Amino acid sequence: MRVFIKTFGCKVNYADTEALVSALAKLGHQCSHISSGWGKAAPPDAVVVNTCAVTAGAVKKARQYARRCLREFPRARLIVTGCAAREEKIASQFESLGATIIGNPNLVSEALGKDGLPVPAPEDTRTRRFIKIQDGCNSYCTYCIIPYVRSMECKRGEQVIDEMMESVNTGTPEIVLCGINLGLYTDPDEGYGLMSLLRRALAILPESSRLRLSSIEPEHVTDEMLELFSHPRLCPHLHLPLQSGSDSVLAAMRRNYDSTYYRDLVKKFRKLHPDAAVTTDLMVGFPAETDEDFELTGEMVSACAFERVHIFRFSTRPNTAASEMGLLPSSVVSRRQDKLLALSKSVSQKALARFVGSECEVALEDSGCGYGEAYQRVCVEPSPAETGLINVSLDGLKQGIFKGKALRV
Ligand code: SF4
Image (cartoon, rainbow, N blue to C red):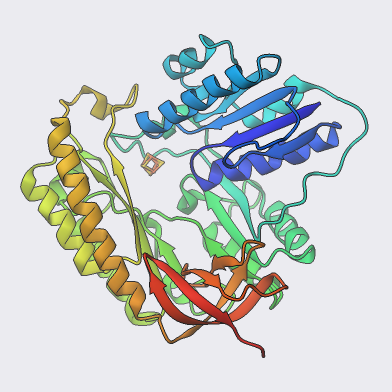
């Protein structure tokens, strides 16, 4: 069977899709990842849409995509999986389109069944492999649907190490450990946590590869962890979701830190590792957010000098505590979103500018672009023939993307 797979959302979803692609290949199905269009590819027998439900906008995008697939491929079976398929009310919106709903992506291969002899999984030309080590969350932030749609689960440390080594031995230069709430990682058999797993992984990782943490909640970052970032194979990059710079909004969101803790954490990290990057997620328009609260978020952006900021707009998610709170007028939220976007852009442009004139090691993709260790997005010109980890000089910066030149060592 020819299967198209489209993935929306976070790195955990991408890791789930990768696992699904190899499971389907073992059953004899031919899978294609669909990133933008499907070009002149032959029509599929099935389309799998791996969805995100974190915002109403994310669900809308997946719904539009599903509709488009039904129009273009009327004979194909449409399967909707992932977070949107795990929440009854949201799933019913896809069901009414005629889709088969399978909440857990691991079960999609069972539904499609065997289709012949195993085929090779599509060659992964990406230079980063996302390994999901943890799933689910029990933090119940008041705006978040995740604890209601994903159950808590951790992968055995041995398995994580095996997957990591299998990838680096087949030439993947960067391993990204991902999870819904990475700091909750606990080996299910032996009970050790994230720090021990990281130490074990770094002890055997060859020099031709490196490790990155996808995102970690601020309250899970310890001094010991900050120090571990001195390891040459651990990318000096922390993605620390902040959400708001106002303590009263953070409390209403039921986040487990306040602005002082967060600011001090970033300061400590930057002092220990001046060449490191800190990136974040921010939410605008949370119901309790006043103009003063919003200004405090702006102040935090400037104080933390983030290298990259991802801005979400609050949207009501079913079952969450915040769904009972009144919404702010859309025009107010749009104004705040635009203002925060402009500020974040100028702050990150300034923060990134300090790398111009320096060198970094880029995990180069086929496209000739890739990420440096401190998450600098770099396009190398002229594009070298080889891929993998390449030393590059950073010669210019435009709209958050560096122009680099490959250095011969
Ligand atoms: S920490 Fe909060 S925002 Fe993150 S997944 Fe858990 S509940 Fe959601």
